[in-house]
Length: 358
Image (cartoon, rainbow, N blue to C red; front, side, top):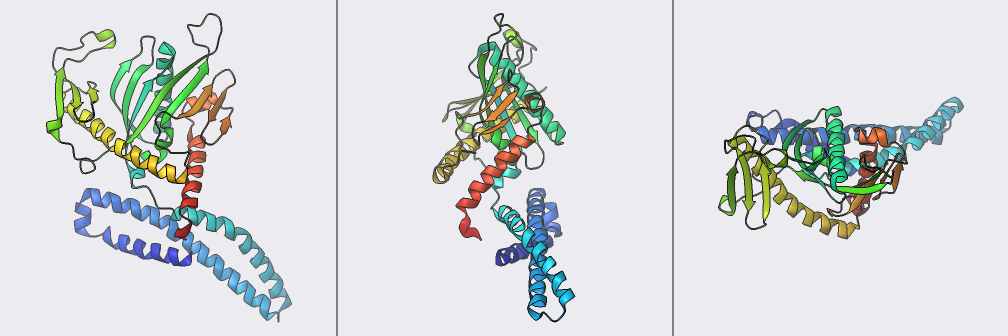
């Protein structure tokens, strides 16, 4: 492990020198990447210093005990040795987790798509609940949320809502939310008091930069229309709404929430790039998870990942068998505890698959 920490320290020193070079500072993209790497490496280097100090304490205590000439010193050394040996395994485990190679996409911003599934109006209302849950969570983390497009439900909520989230390590955090979310509750329209089951699908796409995806604009048909509101009525008479048709994949992306067609086109292209990038990513994740038999981030969009049971006040994440009786706080944005458990499960899987790393 010391050898691995030393390699990290060498890279840390390199990055430390690079981020003060004028040509790096002037290249914003490279500068941001290196700053991120600097922060990640610093965590390992700092823990490495603590680890080396602990090993030195153990060696020093063992030397005093072996010498045995001063009884009082031997007694103190034994206490020091016990303390150091007790804290060593947890520190080693922490460093092992930090040494797991980072997914380069984890630092990216995301495009989130929430779609009502089975359950009619109730599914649309639930999709709206999920959007509010994520908005509150992102706001609490200091992340920025921008709505790209919406299709409102007839009784509230959304048939579909697409929004961007920007901040630090957004994809690395929100990627665990992708999949089918299920709700069990008595709908407001239910007169018999029966519990209904509805569902909504969440997609979390790492925001693709232009260099991530080569988009051939000859394969994209751009349709300009007037913006429409609920029920299809025309909202304005200018052709500012944009609909993109990607001919090779059949993907369609609409955006009408911005004030100008230029802004709508920009947003729509960003969503299209992210969807195409995610398509490739999903294939890779499926192949990787097949190798690792991963349940946490399999890339399977149809996987039922979580159930929100209102009568019992219960939320169950089916991937890791986690059940929490704290639905009201969770649906109001307190999802960090679930994400922490999913991250731990994912890191444990990654650790097993990279045991030759250390």
